[in-house]
Image (cartoon, rainbow, N blue to C red; front, side, top):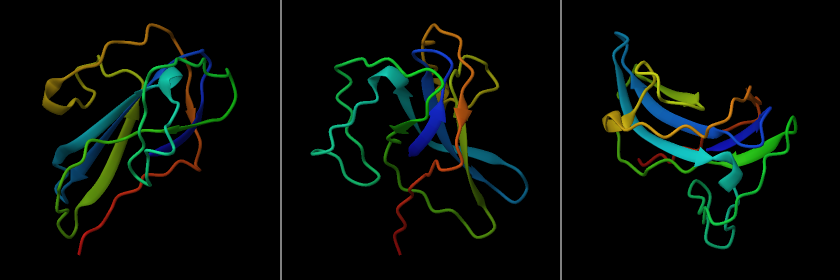
Amino acid sequence: MRLTATATAADTGWLATLQDVAPDGEVTDVTAGWLRASLRTVDDAASRDGAPVLPCTDAVAVPVGQDVEYRIPLVANARRFHPGHRVRIVLTSDDQDPQAPAIMNFRHASVGTSSLNTVRSSSRLLLPVLR
Protein backbone atom coordinates (compact mmCIF):
# COMPACT_ATOMS: atom_id res chain seq x y z
CA MET A 1 0.00 0.00 0.00
CA ARG A 2 1.26 3.48 -0.88
CA LEU A 3 -0.31 5.89 1.54
CA THR A 4 0.11 9.65 1.30
CA ALA A 5 -1.01 11.44 4.45
CA THR A 6 -0.40 14.28 6.87
CA ALA A 7 -0.28 14.02 10.66
CA THR A 8 -0.43 16.56 13.47
CA ALA A 9 2.06 14.63 15.62
CA ALA A 10 5.69 13.57 15.18
CA ASP A 11 4.60 9.93 15.14
CA THR A 12 1.47 7.89 14.52
CA GLY A 13 0.50 4.36 13.54
CA TRP A 14 -1.02 3.09 10.31
CA LEU A 15 -3.06 -0.12 10.36
CA ALA A 16 -4.59 -1.36 7.12
CA THR A 17 -7.02 -4.29 6.97
CA LEU A 18 -8.10 -5.75 3.63
CA GLN A 19 -11.65 -7.09 3.68
CA ASP A 20 -13.94 -9.14 1.43
CA VAL A 21 -17.49 -7.73 1.48
CA ALA A 22 -20.17 -10.14 0.23
CA PRO A 23 -23.31 -8.88 -1.57
CA ASP A 24 -25.33 -9.54 1.62
CA GLY A 25 -22.95 -7.27 3.60
CA GLU A 26 -21.05 -10.05 5.38
CA VAL A 27 -17.45 -8.91 5.96
CA THR A 28 -14.42 -11.20 6.10
CA ASP A 29 -11.03 -9.88 7.14
CA VAL A 30 -8.48 -11.15 4.60
CA THR A 31 -5.11 -9.72 5.62
CA ALA A 32 -3.54 -6.68 7.24
CA GLY A 33 -0.43 -4.56 7.50
CA TRP A 34 0.97 -2.20 10.09
CA LEU A 35 3.51 0.61 10.12
CA ARG A 36 4.73 2.96 12.79
CA ALA A 37 5.09 6.24 10.87
CA SER A 38 8.50 7.11 12.33
CA LEU A 39 9.87 3.75 11.07
CA ARG A 40 8.80 4.38 7.46
CA THR A 41 12.26 4.26 5.82
CA VAL A 42 12.19 1.74 2.96
CA ASP A 43 15.14 -0.32 1.74
CA ASP A 44 14.59 0.38 -1.97
CA ALA A 45 17.29 -2.07 -3.09
CA ALA A 46 15.56 -4.98 -1.32
CA SER A 47 12.00 -3.88 -2.17
CA ARG A 48 9.80 -4.42 -5.19
CA ASP A 49 6.39 -3.11 -6.24
CA GLY A 50 3.83 -4.30 -3.74
CA ALA A 51 6.48 -5.65 -1.36
CA PRO A 52 8.37 -2.90 0.47
CA VAL A 53 11.13 -3.90 2.88
CA LEU A 54 11.24 -1.74 5.99
CA PRO A 55 14.25 -2.37 8.26
CA CYS A 56 12.61 -0.46 11.17
CA THR A 57 16.01 0.42 12.61
CA ASP A 58 16.06 4.23 12.50
CA ALA A 59 13.20 6.36 13.76
CA VAL A 60 12.63 9.57 11.78
CA ALA A 61 10.09 12.08 13.12
CA VAL A 62 7.09 12.72 10.92
CA PRO A 63 7.14 16.31 9.60
CA VAL A 64 3.98 17.73 11.18
CA GLY A 65 1.42 18.97 8.67
CA GLN A 66 3.39 17.84 5.60
CA ASP A 67 2.46 15.15 3.09
CA VAL A 68 4.48 11.99 3.66
CA GLU A 69 4.41 8.83 1.55
CA TYR A 70 4.30 5.58 3.48
CA ARG A 71 4.68 2.10 2.02
CA ILE A 72 2.79 -0.38 4.13
CA PRO A 73 3.32 -4.08 3.42
CA LEU A 74 0.27 -6.31 3.86
CA VAL A 75 0.80 -9.94 4.82
CA ALA A 76 0.82 -12.09 1.69
CA ASN A 77 -2.25 -14.26 1.16
CA ALA A 78 -4.22 -16.12 -1.48
CA ARG A 79 -7.86 -15.13 -1.72
CA ARG A 80 -10.40 -15.51 -4.47
CA PHE A 81 -12.94 -12.69 -4.48
CA HIS A 82 -16.15 -14.07 -5.92
CA PRO A 83 -18.23 -12.16 -8.49
CA GLY A 84 -20.37 -9.53 -6.79
CA HIS A 85 -18.05 -9.22 -3.81
CA ARG A 86 -16.25 -5.96 -3.05
CA VAL A 87 -12.71 -5.38 -1.81
CA ARG A 88 -12.48 -2.89 1.07
CA ILE A 89 -9.49 -1.45 2.89
CA VAL A 90 -10.00 -0.19 6.44
CA LEU A 91 -7.35 2.27 7.56
CA THR A 92 -6.91 3.36 11.17
CA SER A 93 -4.22 4.62 13.50
CA ASP A 94 -5.41 2.70 16.55
CA ASP A 95 -7.08 -0.71 16.72
CA GLN A 96 -7.75 -0.82 20.48
CA ASP A 97 -11.49 -0.28 19.94
CA PRO A 98 -13.17 -3.73 19.86
CA GLN A 99 -15.18 -2.52 16.84
CA ALA A 100 -11.97 -2.03 14.80
CA PRO A 101 -10.95 -4.96 12.60
CA ALA A 102 -8.18 -7.12 14.04
CA ILE A 103 -6.89 -10.27 12.33
CA MET A 104 -7.11 -13.17 14.83
CA ASN A 105 -8.08 -10.51 17.42
CA PHE A 106 -4.46 -9.27 17.58
CA ARG A 107 -4.35 -5.64 18.68
CA HIS A 108 -1.35 -3.29 18.39
CA ALA A 109 0.06 -1.19 21.20
CA SER A 110 -0.78 2.48 20.84
CA VAL A 111 1.97 4.80 19.57
CA GLY A 112 1.18 6.98 22.58
CA THR A 113 0.49 10.28 20.82
CA SER A 114 -2.71 11.93 19.69
CA SER A 115 -2.77 12.89 16.03
CA LEU A 116 -5.28 14.09 13.48
CA ASN A 117 -4.34 12.27 10.29
CA THR A 118 -5.49 13.18 6.79
CA VAL A 119 -5.21 10.64 3.96
CA ARG A 120 -4.71 12.01 0.45
CA SER A 121 -6.58 10.71 -2.60
CA SER A 122 -3.26 9.89 -4.28
CA SER A 123 -2.94 6.86 -1.94
CA ARG A 124 -3.02 3.47 -3.69
CA LEU A 125 -3.37 -0.20 -2.89
CA LEU A 126 -1.63 -2.60 -5.27
CA LEU A 127 -3.27 -6.04 -5.43
CA PRO A 128 -1.69 -8.65 -7.69
CA VAL A 129 -4.17 -10.60 -9.80
CA LEU A 130 -3.51 -14.18 -10.85
CA ARG A 131 -5.46 -15.57 -13.76
